[in-house]
Length: 334
Image (tube, rainbow, N blue to C red; front, side, top):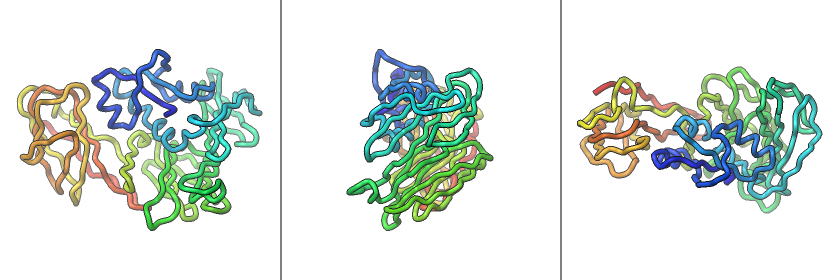
């Protein structure tokens, strides 16, 4: 993996739940997306971040999603420095022969710069000390040769999060990108033939754009850490913290709160930061492990014993085009 985290024992369960690989290392970089991108741009094939709190883990999750789908050049490619860049930018690239390339355009100054990298992209503004990840020519799926790929990414003018093949019998892939509301970016995908491009617009909520038989999901930056891929289903939405309004803060006595279900049964992950409680019941049944099965309408959650902050990560649904967000209320005090 191109990205690892070094965490205290209390944060290990959350790191695992967020899909962040853990490793102890003496060589560490600050736990920020900016520092990780800069290290990749300087030739680091693997980066290990020392993480001290849950907020830093959530901030790194979009890069973990990116590395899972587009990290092959960092794992197996060759590093090239000194690409032709303009406007004060410094450009480098990780290249593979048939598994895509990752160009990194770094702004080393303390102010925003407008520059370009030939021939990848025309003028773009890059924030102070930030690095733009420009991924291109990635195959997404099985292929006997590069141009015969089942589906692939030609290039993305937007920040890439991850990608997945659509489930049978649907051809093509889903490519997830993120950006600020109001931005427009171009994403090109090919499907065993010439590339097709889509101009995607970012709003306050996710949007789906068709590119041939593939799809591009435009995710606003606020939701980027909260993208959950469950095999062939996708859920987008913020985690639901059970510490709102005084519920489940860590008392030693029994606590009860209500979890509102959807119109059909759903599964969810119950995660405690730090210390776990003695026991948990859901609808009168003891909970073993972290998985909850939520019934429609209301669910009774009871916790016994002292514990750390708690939150629920519900599984949900995105079947091909439709993105639906769960209806989760703010937890109320017992």
